[in-house]
Length: 465
Image 1 (cartoon, rainbow, N blue to C red):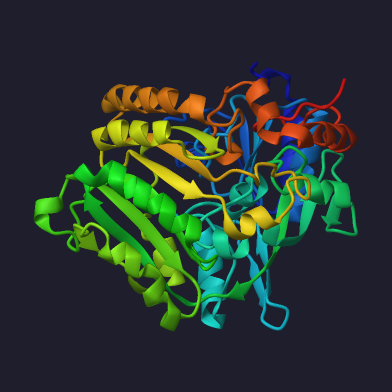
Image 2: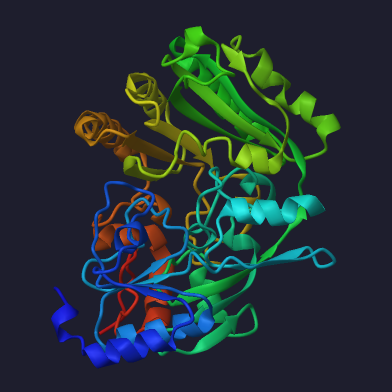
C-alpha cells in the first residue's frame, strides 16, 4: 500500500529538520544507491530512507513511522538475504553510518554500534588479540547476525554471537530508549538474543571478547569423487574434535584465483573450511587428520590472522550478486541424508552457489534452549543450500538445483529454520516452528513492547490480538 500521498509535506519537512543524518526520498540523486542492498534480487522502493547519525535520529524515525502508519524496515549491514532491510512505500531506518566501536581491554568487552560489519569489529579488536564469534563473511552486519543468533568460525569454542551479548541499547516502538541486560528489562534482553528485529531498533551491542589472534584456519579441498566418503569422515572428525576446532563441510567450484592451481579452476570439489582457535602448538596435531585424509586436492590450511580468515570469502560473495537460499536444522545427519548430499552437491553450476553444513555443537549446546530466544540448541548441524549468480538469467537453473536438493533433504530435517537464512514469505508456521517452545513467550514480549507490530518487516512474531 503506497503511503506517500497521505504524508503531510510540512510534517515531512519538520521531521527532516530534526535529523542530524540524511533523509533520502525517491526524488533525490542518492536514492537508488541508498536502497541498494547486498542481494541484487531485491528491488524495493521505500518512500523515505533515514540515514541516521545517532540515537536521536533513530528515536525520531521510529516516532514518525508510528505516527504516520508507515511500514518500517531496519537496515544495519544490509546483508540479509531476504531483503528485510528494505520495504516498499515505507520508511527505512538506515544505521549504516553509526559505526562507533569502543574496546575495553580490561573487561574484554566491545561496545559496537549497529551500522558496523564484522570486519569493522575485527579491525577494532584484533590489535588487542581479542575477538567475539562472528559469521564467515566480514561484510555481514553485526546487528542482523546477532539478533538472529549468529554462528561461524568461533562458535564451537565460544558460542553464538547472541550468547556473547552482554547488553544492548534499544529504541522500542513507543520511541523510548532502553539499555537492556540480564538485570534491566531481562525479558526484552532474552527476546533479542535470537528473536530478530521484532522488538525494536538495537543501536548498540556490548559483546564479550575472547583471546583470539592467529588461528590455524582455511580450506582443504578434496576430489569431488570423494564427496560421500569425505562427508562420513568429516562427521566422525567433528564429533570428536575439541571445542577449539570448528570446521564446516561444503561444495564449491574451484575459484579462478592465483592461489588455486589452474587445473582446479571451475572444478567441483569438496571443501572442509577449518578454524582452530586454541594454542597453535596443539593445533597441528588437531588438524592432522584433515591433512592425511584423501589425500587432499589442495591444502590451504595455515596459521592466519583471524580477520583474514573471516574475510576469506568476501571477494567471492561480493555485494551485487543474485541470491536465493534454503536452509534447515539437522537433528542428526542420517545415512540417507549423506547419500543425498553426495548426489546433489557435485552438481553445483556457479562459482558462488554452494551447500554449507555448519556444526552446532560445542559451546553452542552448553546454553539451554530456553536461556535465549534461539531455541535449536539440540541440533547437530544446519545446512544452507544457496543459488547465487551475477547473471539473473542463470538463476532459474541454479534455483532448480537448490530446490531439488533442499526438498530431498527436508524430510531428514527439523521443522523450523534459522532466521538469518530464511527468505521472505516462508510462512507463519515456519516462524513458529523456528522458536518451538519459546514462541509463546516471544509473543508475550512482543505484545508488551510492540503491540501494534510496528516492527513487522522481519521473520515476524505477531503480537497477541
